[in-house]
Image: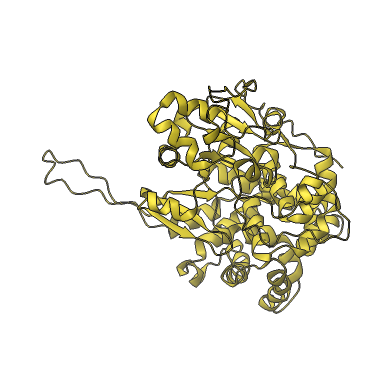
Length: 480
């Protein structure tokens, strides 16, 4: 079954026009060696930019010859400068001035090309983590499996800087593997070159690098045509890539849902065929990706695709079985997906994702309600249901405990009996869940809105500003 077209969606935004720069032959100097070969032919990162520090023209020519014979296509794509984070641009340019290669990379480039607004900016560079730390006093090194540099700015902003890596196996290049081969990547802690870093990524639309100075997109994987077609396609054989890292199945769902992208038919078939591999993936990553599926207004499409390809039956079989048996649940799937749509609407209206506890409680509410129906020990029934879920997707105990308490509170809230619950820290999240439950059933949510008004602290009275600014009272912030 293929993904259905939603006729209610607005037309996709117009994409900027792109041109492919013709391959330039290296100029030969009087000595017979390619001009700038000391900087670009071997991808020597330090030589690249150092030549440009003394001679700007020579540096530009050397940059044009970077990555020669690696299959690179350069696309002229002057992205909106206002959409590029100035601190990320500052990081890139300082690395370049120090003699390293540095590019904006990944999701920020993809979102800018799709006329979106990136939520964060990542940088890929030839500099090693210690080199980055030596250039930025506001830098910290994180990670055990693979070290990354985080450059910290005001307001909690973090620009992540990663050294170019390469795929530790040759399977991607060969494109061949036996079905019994264990392709699961357990370590990719290998430094590499820029083109190798692009080739090791999951999808072509995520493997685009942006050269700030030349205002060009560097494309080794055919990502620009896929951006223009608004299509998700893997780098290399889809089945191999999903067996290397099954979480990529969930990432494909996330991008399709959040960015309204199509999934290439071969990729879709491989997602279906590789769904059982999800049981082998790292469980904390699974839980985090499920949360990401529900954030940013994409939960309805994400859960529908997850259910459709059979991934939900692997990770959340209880929920999948509930949705499969619509007759026994009296339209349970309709209520569930209506609840997901309402969750997305509320997320867009509030301008940000809801609390993780609300997201997970909403996700499992219907099947938890069914499991506890007619049971005298409601808390025991909820515990029996959640225990295997906690083990299967590594749900944190704090979230599981909050779900248990909210499932106990919501029936009483719906009955108008708040009591002592109104004084607990989970009362407002429970009201959010109760509001979604009522709305999915077509019932009025005005009682919930009244309870929320009573639970929130009153706004301070407004005062006329005094004429003397020095003696005027300082305005206090209001906790939402």
